Image 1 (spheres, rainbow, N blue to C red):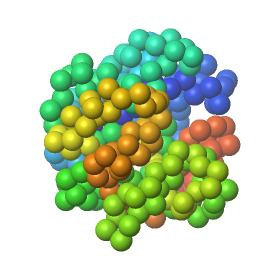
Image 2 (tube, one colour; image 1 turned 90 degrees about the vertical axis):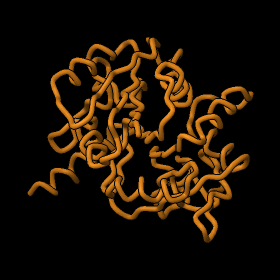
Image 3 (cartoon, rainbow, N blue to C red; image 1 turned 45 degrees about the horizontal axis):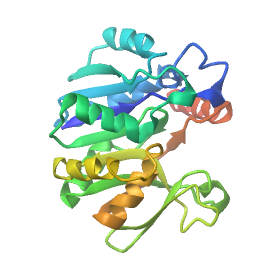
Length: 247
């Protein structure tokens, strides 16, 4: 199994902190977001390599950080060669880049590089392997107004995704996608098929919705903490919570 951390965004809502530093290297509770994510993935014994896809502007910064840290698996930084928020590939474009560049043929655990979570990712991987289809981790934000900011899902009694809407005005539920996905090797061709469609190639939710409609997708719902680091307020809140845990 391979891991893939999506870290090619420019973090414009976190300026000035992210003018010279990528969002994934911001510290939360004394550790960078990237370090916390890699520590989570390291618990998955089947994972033997992790790719961090970033942009041309921050490639050297992240690659230098990676060079100074050692993990059980090999970690490689990949440059998507974009230089600004205006020409970014988007998350789906970056996933496609890594799949083609590395000719991947194994299961892939995909994690957004700007969010933190407290559940045991081993449980999610076990759930996904049992399903044998695309699996997505969801967190109940318990607020319809807040749900409008995220990709929102409706699940049936078997946890199969029956509806997925990106930032809906009328959310079908309050289950928010957390940017954590598991794509089995047998479904990689479905991703290639999606890339040949005219559907949007930015937010991953577009692919998730397409998979739910054209194949199958399942939802893993967790109740432990989740922090979407999108702006200065959310960064401050996450930092405060993680520091509390250290007391």
